[in-house]
Length: 221
Image (cartoon, rainbow, N blue to C red):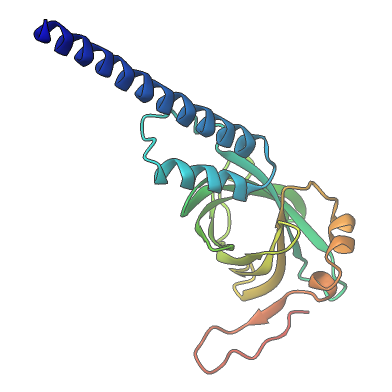
């Protein structure tokens, strides 16, 4: 009789433990699904970063992660190399997996008297609201032999969830150039971007000398 009672207690206890385990897994899956839904529906790249960070922190390595869904489309705006400040625009497709960011940027540039679309490879890092991206021109069908183009964007997230800062790159005229730069999920026209960031784009690009002791900026044009 005692043996039968012990078996009954054992089976009841085992069933209860399985029930608790299943409930915990169910709740965890609900929380994770909701976080993923909110993150992926958001236009703010930082929400995607939050989801990736959460996934890593709770050890959800078994979850599938569709890399195509991780592609974030953003638009970059920067001053022109003109005394009368104009705005150039480029489209960036970035895969954000903290702390790394990789992708491409494409934008129209003047080349040999015509306008072509140029492509840059992008690699960088995102941490504590700071975004640093390195860029390098790469051949494409529209631009098979691009001129040397290398540089970096040094940006910080602002109150509107955009990124603003400075772009420094090696220009086609073989000078390092420093330009104000803004990165956002909003697809502005050049004039809309200039109106949206009036203080940022009130100046044109500047030619700079990266030689130590000779960093005095001067007007490019």
